[in-house]
Image 1 (tube, helix red, strand yellow):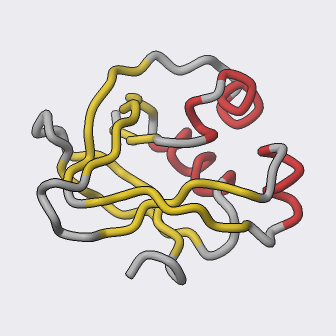
Image 2: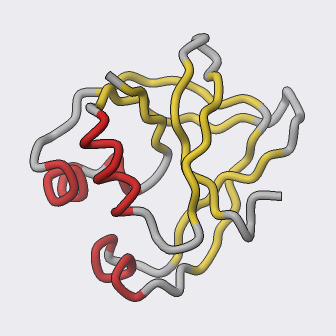
Length: 114
């Protein structure tokens, strides 16, 4: 199983059902050294799937005082690939360590990540 840390639309039951065909069971965790920023998604297919063009995106700061609360889900590799397909154009999957010590995948917008 793979671990997927979510902080946005993948936490929504309707998005999980549409993306994975099931409701995911998760647990709260925290990503240290990142903060949330608002971005506008231009990928029309994603806007239709998620219901909005305005989304939160992770931005790496490296500051221990910055953190993002979210949910970590256990998913299969096939589900992780479905998650890849769900994310809008320009996003990449990156492996990070969460506050709990779990290594989990996150998605960063390549243009906004720095």
